Length: 175
Image (cartoon, rainbow, N blue to C red; front, side):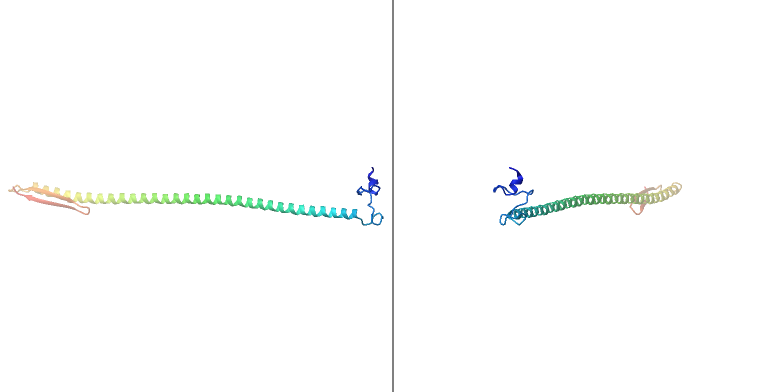
């Protein structure tokens, strides 16, 4: 059976094809509106609607995917920014801790120097007073040795050292 013969309506069970014009079964004239053309148009409209539906669905899927990619990119950017912020805060804390430690070391060195200086000055003052008392003792002893005393008395000394001054007591004892 040839396709052209099927399209001309020679066989009642054959469907018309695109190669042959469909016959109008109601009026028998070729090219008139018939159930074959209406079905074809409806099928084409259905295909177009289906194509549009698929295109809209594809557009929605693509939009969802692009949104997902953008959100993922923003999330990665936010995480990277957070990591950088944490690093920067840690760096600032370390710098602040170094400054604080340096200030503490400088303060303790200054305090040690001040205490040392005060100690040296106190030591020098006590030594100076001690030297004054010692020279006074030497003078008294020298005068006493060369003094002609018939009683031949002895000298007894007592020394008290305080933080502010040096006290020296001399007693003359007769035997």
